[in-house]
Amino acid sequence: MNLVCDHITFGYSRKAPVIKDFSFTFPPGITILKGYSGSGKTTLLKILAGYLKINKGNIITPSGDKVTSRAYRRKHASYMFQGINLLPLVSVERNLRLCAEMAMLPRKDWQPRCNHLLEALGLADLRKRRADKLSGGQSQRAALARTLMKNSEIVLLDEPTSGLDDGNTDIIKNLIRNDMADKIWIISTHDVRLFDTADEIIDFDMPVSR
Image (cartoon, rainbow, N blue to C red; front, side, top):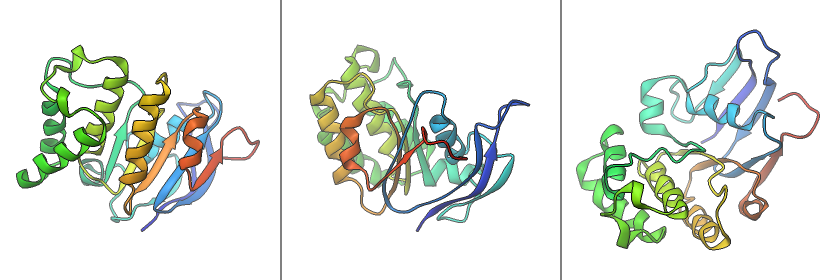
């Protein structure tokens, strides 16, 4: 089970390509994308999440679905934006349940998965709290819980520990390690504290086509 990028190229409008002739096979495990802002890390994540359509090349998914297909985005890939993007006026638990509904998960799977994630991320006592009443660290952890609610085989995280203290970062690292299973994790980050979780690191600062 791999996610394969085969000589993909992407550019915004008529500008020079942000991603050029990039080939890489993402296996199960954790791959970290590191590099300066604007180097193409987030663009690659959005391509692999199906939000941007490549200009050239091919992407082969484990399920065989196209990355731009509704089935792929709904079931097979989970994307955590750099912004929190929780629904502010509903509870933490409701945010997770809505994600499960959108992914069309069986109802019998909702509560056990929700309970597991809230417990693992130290949010069990906050499940009924409105999202706009959470602290920054709590919001970041709740956003990760919502992202993982679908239990997709591909998990794409954009700066999941940005601005967090060591305590909150350790909670997130522990969950990533313990929830790896056979998932393909691709994490864009500047945070060196996450580097020791990686099976492989792709350096976008290197002067090569990507």
